[in-house]
Image 1 (cartoon, rainbow, N blue to C red):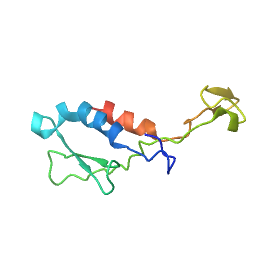
Image 2: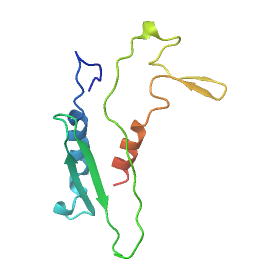
Image 3: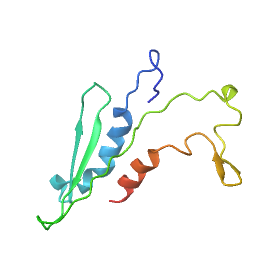
Length: 112
């Protein structure tokens, strides 16, 4: 999943394949409520799209824009602190990914 061109070209499909497998039992095809698909504009870097329609066709809807699935390298020698260890300094969290959005991917997957 590394995002560090030109050596490491991102392959988000490696992660989204897992997300698709986890959500498969909840798809319309399997009797669930979700319409799940992958849209690909660049090979290996597809986007997972979910639709969860209301039974009430007149109901308003909610849109959610998710997040990325790729990662960037983290050389600890280039950091002022250990990026692989969560530390708390007052109200500041330090560690790789503490302000990232990958939690949204896990949250949406766990909703179903």
